Length: 488
Image (tube, rainbow, N blue to C red; front, side, top):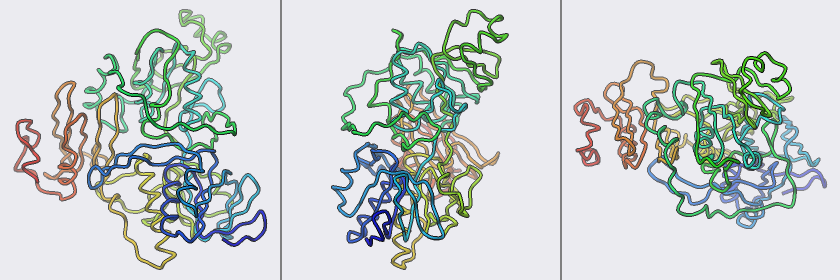
């Protein structure tokens, strides 16, 4: 590292963002170039790291996400310097970054991994919370402890986990679709798992054994407008208590095919025509009027309606190609349109022609893969080596848990982009398993596996090798046939 002055420093590699993508990228670079100083800029005092990584199959990965102080990273990688200061300005042509603490960083290669922020239904309302990072999850826990009723808006992964985990509080769940979990599962799978919302939840055998760290620096709760925190991990709710003020264990009411039309404060509601028409709604801090005509009072609203890539500090004065979702568009080497600027994770959008079985879904698994691959690409460019698109982008694969069921998603699991040109095979055993296969022209394009099916590796192979399954017909999912024996 060459120092220009006290406030100006120069690095071969700079990574911006302390989430899974940024940390993975920085770790890979630090490992590959042990004699070079690598800098990781993070807005938050803690960074996200991958632990207990397990390669389940060729493309399926399972891991835990830990939040750690940056010193843990620096101890493991002596050439990795973690600086807690958010990026305020990027001058891409000059290859310089300015941070909040006034430092200027000159880079040879930069990777932007600043994630995304919640897309709140209403900005700057103290009774509307977004859950995206650890700070906002802790703020949610604090608010929930005294709540009797909350309204959850959204139908993605965080909403699915939230409504199942919350206890001691009535939950009104507003989803815009005809079924729950639309981003991940189909209507049939939704019908399979929804009885779990009313059933007694299984007791957790052991508490989460992750190490918890505290920091000296107080960080203001991030309710979603602009926040330093990186995305929550796959089991963010494990280490916090999601219990409200009531004695009820689990009470969820779903309102389908609706969105929030208007939000009223207590004072606004009492002055509105709704108050005179429906005086039985009680006295609450906030009221949500739904597009289906119903109105609910509640302690607060949780906005879990997706995310917006966190690109703002990098756009002014630069010439980035942005995708329709406002992510930094990257090519097959994770490079943006600005020279020597790469991007990975939720902040970017894949701009290459994807494989027939892959799609981007802003998930922690893809953040890890993109961060690792971006580092490989940056290194290859420095070393003058050729690099091909990594195999992880051949097949979309994701393993998670919804309503205490193991869920595996493979390929075009919801027939994404296939139009009417596909057929479905479904096998369902109530309370035990749900298996759906997407076929086109007799070849498997995707699958949803819920429960302990043990079919993920077999189905992954069948999608990748595109074997003609027409001769098997319905027998493909015959529970009396061990399908693995067929296709070993």
